[in-house]
Image (tube, rainbow, N blue to C red; front, side, top):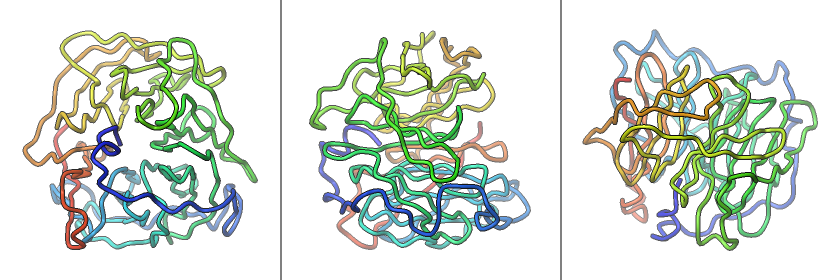
Amino acid sequence: MTASFARRGLLGAAAALAGSAALGGPLAPGAAAAGPPPAGPGPTAAPLSLTTPAGFQPEGIAVSPSGAVYTGSIIEGSIYRADLATGTGRIITAGTGARSVGLKLDPFGRLLVAGGDSGEIRVVHAGTGKVLAVHRAATGSTFVNDVVVACGGAWFTDSFNDALYHLPLTPGARPTRLALGGEWAPVPPGGEYWGSNGIERTPDGEALLVVHDTAEALYRVDPRTGRATRTVLEGAGSVSNGDGLVVRGRTLYVVRNWSYAVDVFALSGDGRRAVFLKRITDPRFDEPTTAAVHGGRLYVVNAAFDADWSDPATTSTIVAVPL
């Protein structure tokens, strides 16, 4: 999600949940956290577009190896799961009023959900949709935006603060704050300017990649120290309006929402250099925010910020494009 979300004032303030409360068990491996059920025979005949439920404005995406796709609503936080083989789906978690922005699956069949301006990190059973835990990562002016599972746990960006939040995948773990430094361009406090947005890992798995909305730059971040170094971009590609990031091998996909495009780069193993390969555009892109790779396709979420979301019948789409 990007700065235009705040400027256009499309949604009301989300309700915040108090404290960091466990709801149904700690963040820990276990039989109760089995992964989602199989999702069909595969993507070869899968629909090229999925429509979200009425009144459900999607932003983030996660896809299981079996082809179950998950997205969360940035209106009231519900979570929708669909089958990429058939296009059918249902709401598995009812919204509480706190947004669901970026989300990812962990190795134990749980969804890790960024809670936007609620400051929350939520842990959700990917099979049943049950909320397993809620953690308060930040208070005040905050926007917990996106997440990646890498480098020893889950890492969340905060677009209004120069920090990442780290949640280890161990019993009883709580999120900790890692300040961003080095070459990172600081963001003035108060939420007027947006900093960190999408997050991924470097191809060698040793560091994190974070796109900076206001600086229009990509940074490599050391997860031990928070030191950031600006990734050198070569060629005609851009990360302006950069929102979601996807790394597949040494290929980086940058979803550029208000540019209605996905720019594709070849990364060095350590993530310090990126060479532009191509730009993916599609007439179906409607303020695309995030993406995931599955079965030789890139599945792109349309947040449709310009749509009339005051109309409860409004829907949006997840569209598939070739890699």
